[in-house]
Image (cartoon, rainbow, N blue to C red; front, side):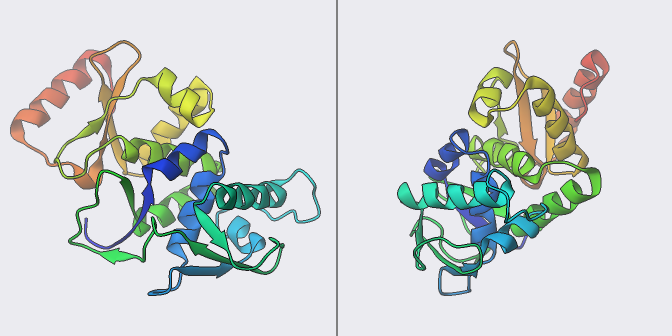
Length: 230
């Protein structure tokens, strides 16, 4: 795949286990920063509505308040800088730390410290969430987690993390993990096959996958054996 992409540090990705809105908020800020400036001029309502959620600015426990708290946490932990203090509902200027530079054009070989997300796939997940009633925050978190465990410099590299580890890292149930994994497959963003270890699967990125006759034969054999969708 060719095109624009954003990058997040793997250190930032770890924040997902602390706040499940982290992936949604960070990916939004990266996708909407000014070219050449590193600054995203936005507000909480925009972040919420453009991420496929319904604004509820008057609620003390709803999505707006949770996004606001997420921004505060990300700034506290040094992943973003708020240029308009304090954080308000309608006037926020966010400057990303040096970890998330401007949008890049390929060719580019991201270091092992970064997670690369094509902006085309980012918007595809938003549209899928809206169309099918999925929580975009959980969907983007799962996608980011899988990418963070794959070395894109190696064709057909895969994430081989156990389902139990993924559930703990993302704070989701086994049912939700299975449901959202199927959604990523349905979106055409990943492929999945059974792993060698118990409770493990192998997740491949479709934009980093190269078909070969030998591999296709292997996949076909696995499909016949366990019915895994690949």
